[in-house]
Image: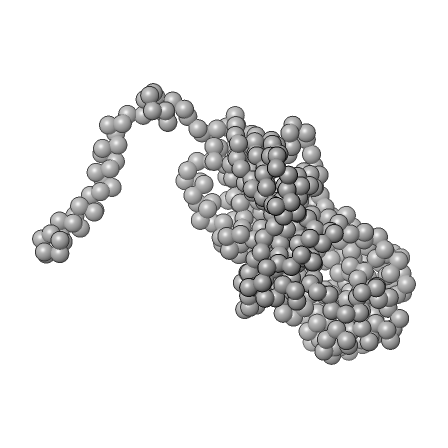
Length: 419
């Protein structure tokens, strides 16, 4: 990585992760002015639910060449190659967080590096602040894919002290400021096809309820359980080798399937979460997360595994999952250890195929049935009346062997007068 930051000529061409919003528009102009470099913009459609095409015109207005404006629909790749592999592990961070923000960052970084290689850029730039996790996730991914790339992180470099400075800079350079954007937003939102996360200001006191401006906004991903209908929704999800492939018998692509589950979840009040998480930069952060489709999918996948996975494999997966979740949260997607864990997880999914029936009602997802041609469930063995291939007398030796060490310890204690 180059050492001569903030010097014109240090970078010739940079690929900027660009949303078209005020902050990344300011960054675009700042790059042109500070580094004197050519800026290539990259806008990713990950299913955030916003119109992203206007980013093209905004970039053109700021002098970016048409051939250097990339707007890519990555929704299918996002679900197929990032979300689904994560859900094969039943991944949750700190017991509740489905990692909707974390899992998107390596894909954005991957595509940025691909574009940098395509256009001959010598640098990449992101708009993550110096306080959060995303700066680490982006940059670890950059270096894993292009070890000598120059990374520009404006929030760690520029002199702006706060939002008033940014607004003044925008006005000075005639950068469009949308109505209502001059003042600090009451909270910030990150969104993709898996989730939305709302953080900051209105949510910074963890003792206060999530305000209505957050959980009842117009673009919310889920309604509250109180708003949900009084009638349950019944759906059947089909699985093939650990990945969901159909809903109620209708085959769907990964992105289509998650979109449909999102709508079902929203309509039934699924997936809202008031969360305080431990950032790996050392502070706690409170946010309101909405993951309706992911919440349904996690329950269904676990139910499918319950009849198709061997006990030892399932328990080992459960032991590995927290480590796997932490790797994703910490931005370690492209590391050897994550790839090793992924290989083990994927190997366990060979027979995780079949159907799971769910009852979804007022914020809850309940398993209502499951079946698989690869099921390990044996009614003859488990039934009270039929012995099948199991002899109850065999249990006596098993119990006594496992109890032997306990009996030896008890005999010792009796001999020493401890009992």
